[in-house]
Length: 170
Image (cartoon, rainbow, N blue to C red; front, side, top):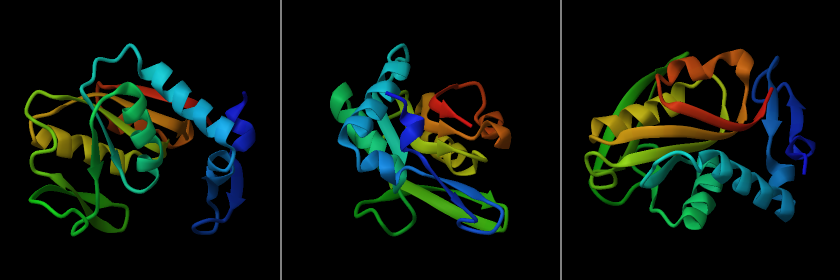
């Protein structure tokens, strides 16, 4: 199955000059969605990991079914104020300002190996911040897994030495 057939280009979203890769058609086609999850898991199969973590919202879409299929825990990484228990956070810089990500303080024990999952790797800023948050807790980023990588934005260059897995590349 060619998953690229289920990715829609949306011109000038969210701002003029950007071509947004819309995964909604893939999510609306159960066989394609299942194939995407299967392919992401297959690529991650050589990686030794204990848990899958992902940023909301689109990272959850792939991270949760991957964790269920792999039989490992899932750790949500969220914006401030969205998690009900004590959290640890990481502040990071964006092109125009800053942001913060949080996870529960007990989500990743020291030494635990984490597969970080998201739908798309673009500039790498948010997923790099997720990795820093994992490391701040003493966890190890075993690898990164994406459905799509926009290679021309060179986001993988921000992710250090951890393996980067992706199903589709543009």
